[in-house]
Length: 362
Image (tube, rainbow, N blue to C red; front, top):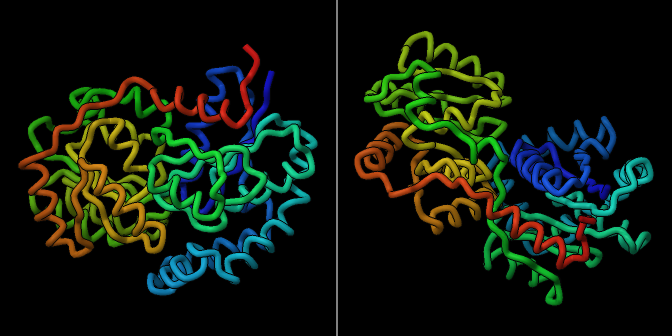
């Protein structure tokens, strides 16, 4: 049996959802996989520091924008130093995992992991290396010489890879989603399970694993406007407390913390209000229009513009009153969207991996 080591990263939940989707696709061809957190490979103290620095930078949008657009995106000195430091600290632990698991493929879905896979390739040429980037535009840390194939989801993303490696093997594939979203229930069944009325407009409100943005204010204003709100805090415990308080005050709000019921909640909703990220792809698989919140700086702004270009999405406001107007507009005239049942992305995924030299037996 072939083996694949998937390098994810615990900055938010998006990278892990891509890793889960890839692991499911690999399992369908009897490829055993293991997912590693590239951040945890830094060691406990450095991982904790990395999380803290990233959270603080995200909280100050101009600071993160400056770092992303002026350094990461173009490959400035600061970005190169950060990449080198991360590789130096994580590589011994990564090699120990490689020696233990003996993978035939190293698949990086997180930029820090891309450097580790590329270095391993220089030392062990027989190992196939791939990078799967679902962001709309690559920054410097994604691109290294030792990568056999880059998987991206648009021509724009492919061009951003080739800016750094003109000779790169780049394959454009459909963005992945986890199997549960393809198998989501019907709206009627989901609402019946959740105890929701069938004739009341319902919105799923969430913003990634970290619950970024004024979701509690948005939930209250939407509920006051007559919309049933399924509000998800993710791993944001303070937001969860505020949402629970709002739900106690207004039964039109149903609050959730970190939950694995997102496919069901999407299915029950008429639309999804969220930040740019892999949630948007999942909403499209379920067949729900999106109202985007511009709350993630840096790469989040790039992803937001690409989501709008794909269609089926409207740009919301972080001002709750204005957001209500956008939501009501989409509810009155929703774009035509059908659920996706065929997992076409998996076929494209395998074709891309084969172009990089990885084809499991059988």
